Image (tube, rainbow, N blue to C red; front, side, top):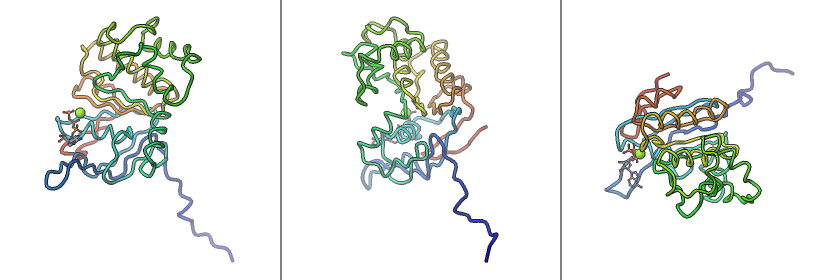
Length: 239
Ligand SMILES: Nc1ncnc2c1ncn2[C@@H]1O[C@H](COP(=O)(O)OP(=O)(O)OP(=O)(O)O)[C@@H](O)[C@H]1O
Ligand SMILES: [Mg+2]
């Protein structure tokens, strides 16, 4: 006997570079708890830059840290390229982050005792690569952000805008599929800020996915979509 009824199990689920499913993130202990994220669900497509906006304390950095596997949520699931990170132990989650995700922090987070080139190489080195053999790749990453010939400078010998570009080169190096930036323009003038977002935008146009936390409508204008966060919840989505 044959049957023509469709099998629901064969329906493909879409795989995104980043998907957050019903994420809740609570800090502190009762009775002094703060719900930084409250049932947040979202995803980012390849080639898409999503801006996150919202008041101070609304949960933007927490959302980015959860997406970047830097902070474990209290509940919910984070999927990176369809892989559920929630069930991974810390070591495996860190490896997944280093291999797939580039993070640009607001305060650059460059290591002062390492040169510009060594800072850029850090994620690859942590992953076991031999930096001496990667000099061409690192110089290419520096050239991509307009910092040719800066490999041997130390962070204190470069400007704030240049330091932010080093942080971006470090986030871009290797086959990053997901780029996360927490107010990368916070310390920059508008022209330098536009340059920095432009570099991110280029890489996203080549197929990466990105999340950009910003207070500035000017910089949010580079995004394909803006998500507004308030009190740990997504309040609006603009296309
Ligand atoms: N490690 C932590 N322990 C306790 N509370 C925290 C912690 N991290 C964040 N919070 C709280 O969670 C809420 C969201 O913080 P978050 O840093 O995500 O806000 P934000 O939107 O990034 O703000 P800002 O625009 O000021 O950077 C805030 O009330 C904050 O005080
Ligand atoms: Mg923040």
